[in-house]
Length: 100
Image 1 (tube, helix red, strand yellow):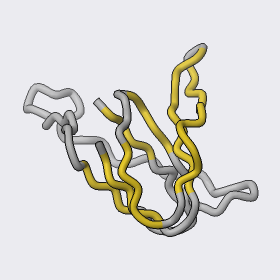
Image 2 (cartoon, helix red, strand yellow):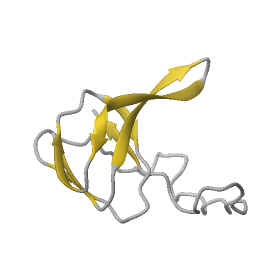
Image 3 (cartoon, helix red, strand yellow):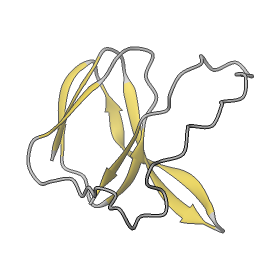
């Protein structure tokens, strides 16, 4: 269960894999500005917002791991340079959430 604080209306989409690509499927109704408490099934979720969002895990947990000395990506490589933004969407990160 998560608490999501948002400043504008938001649609949560659940991402599923089809033919090796992520496909967005609408999950629930539009969320109004304010705090929404959601119970999500395990999976990958995404949403777009024009304002800052705050996500808090209320119940459940997050699976995380720490790289070890045997990890081939330790130390992690430098991040890739992002290509210039194109299109009519505002530049920014697309928030995603994985529920395990």
